[in-house]
Image (tube, rainbow, N blue to C red):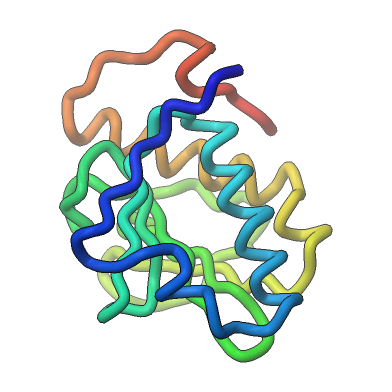
Length: 146
């Protein structure tokens, strides 16, 4: 499948967010990035050096058009979901008590590549798509995994 992802670099680059991180953290982040692009090939990727995160969504506005972000930590990568409180987290993976924001701490490649994480990202994509009134894509645009 051809990748159509668009990266907007006016706020930073992948390297400015993940470049100085440990090899394990970079590898986990790259696995998650591949997973997101695999699920939503025409995603908009917005690295934000100031936020120390890379957002993914249907446009560059992080709070309204993005569905998730990757944020490096010392020993892991957090996958954050802007509207995580609205998602059905049947595996109880998400943490957080805010009004909407939730995150999952990813410590290893196995978890980063898991069907459970893929399913949460899929739900987040679907939630944002619905909230933005974007017509349902074909299976080539978003592949459901569960």
